[in-house]
Image (cartoon, rainbow, N blue to C red; front, side, top):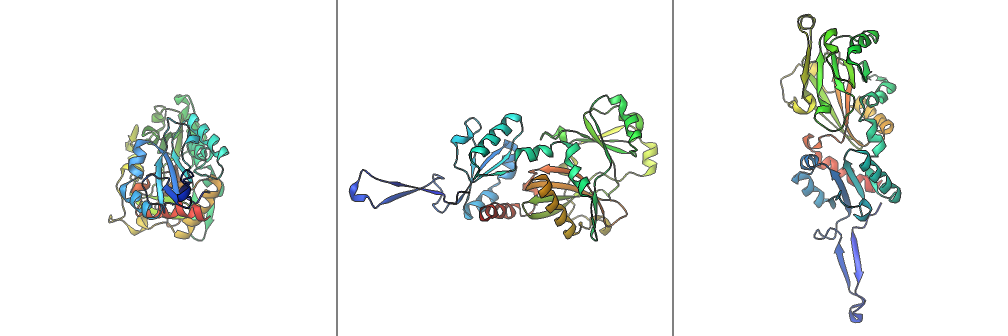
Length: 337
């Protein structure tokens, strides 16, 4: 990784001033102590939510410069960068990034395109959590039973019965492409309603969890947890009297923070820190990602039974408390490592 953020030029035309060096910052206006250059390729919406003034201001104080990558120009002609931070979709962008990485192995790419693709599919997204089957004295972490449906809505009811899934069922789009629609979910209360769903999708058993989920942010080795309101619990009476499919927007992002709400302590208690640290460490290794979050719920009536219901790459860090300090420290840690 390149540590020096300055370029020096010798004025050879003036022999008398041969010893004088003109030092220019590559940032073209930032002070010469600039050390770390982060090129970013983000959507306009992501740029606005992530690159907030408080982050850029703190980054400048720590010697970090964020530079927008011009997507209309070859990436190899831009920079030089120490780190490339990105969240763009499409095969063309992935290929551009792969080619750039091969030519510039000294640059840290956050994160590898192939690893990101793994969590863009809900069939593979939670597989590493299921394979891990984490269980220790602090609790147990798993995933809800689920079924992938790729076509033929009329076959969904029979497929759900054959798979042994219990109603109600949460339906989520199979592919996570960054759009709002890919994060919408539906709750089906009866078998007949399942045929109204639109494949490709993933069916997950709904687990009562007190209407609260834990959004666990991962930034390198740092972990930050916030409570969010979630879908309310479903009782047997509701299950018998309700029918149809109820559609919801992106629940975990649209819902309000529940950190200051007056909640039952059994529902509001955060998952044990050692359990989250072990889970995050294993998933960083298995997924090959350093920037992601997990939506985790606690099964109602238990203190130590948890389920991961979603994993998102490069989530809305702007909503994470103290994100500017956590993120800048993480970027600097990449230099030291």
